Image (cartoon, rainbow, N blue to C red):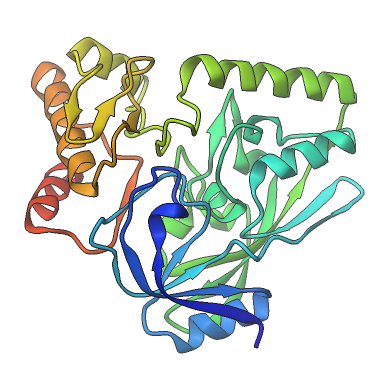
Length: 301
């Protein structure tokens, strides 16, 4: 059996927010083949990777969960890189730098995995996943088949990819990097780490990264700061004083605390600027009546 299974698995120890109830059953596939077999046989499972930009319900997930943490194989072939969906992207950035290959520098401070990075076309410092992406393999949850998709077919945009529109689960991906002086790559990575240190809370303050996406030609952080959200608190959750687009789990916050705080932030910007911010964090799991209402408001077009 090429997977582990744990019953009543506590998800908050797996998330960067340190929030989340239990999964009835958590499956940890060791191979892509085992992953596909689970996707074929389980009934509508929830797939989780690094859990760095998700808010998992404190009531847990009512069903099976597949965690991709064991799908962490990668290899270089000259300038090309193959990586499975569960590989942590900071490791790829470091390994690429060791081989004097550029294109992954912006991922050095990301706590996520290849699956999440491709899903949302992760970006920072003018570098995007789509810049180096060549192709990927996905599992189609409807047809139960494996498809190969190239860059053009992935419909990449700002924080967007085809994976958000189709019932596709990323299995693995290939990237084309470019040769560069190792010292220059290291300098860029260090600059990126220094920037994150100044502008973002580290994971000793549990958080899920940026809470809202930047609206076109503007910054969510700027709008939120001008709206006066810094320091706002709801239960154990607080808007970080260092940057208005981050919420930290200050004291055993629940998913309801974060949802109420997000909704307050959303409404303060909407009331001041008539701009509806779009959540970058995704809610997963059982929603209480209040959470359902709060998220329905924030996700309405």
